[in-house]
Image (cartoon, rainbow, N blue to C red; front, side):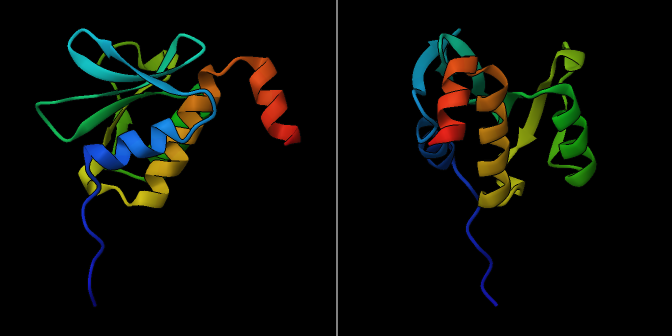
Length: 117
């Protein structure tokens, strides 16, 4: 049985930019993905890790469901900042995580429009 390839930064970029009104911008020298000027994902360049902004409940659920892949950040985890070791995650999990992060910061009007689309 062939295993699927490890996700890459290009996969992260593709998934993040597929979110409605998402765009990429620099954040202190690293790529970040935003919606409505709020960051929902940053991509580390020195290790296979991204930082996501999740709702606290979603963060805790994903940590429990994906130990060793999803963990609290060492700064402001109570505000939903979450590490994801993307090379050990599968693409469906990354898609779910990035969608949750996007939803955590997207403007309410955009969320409502997406819910009715």
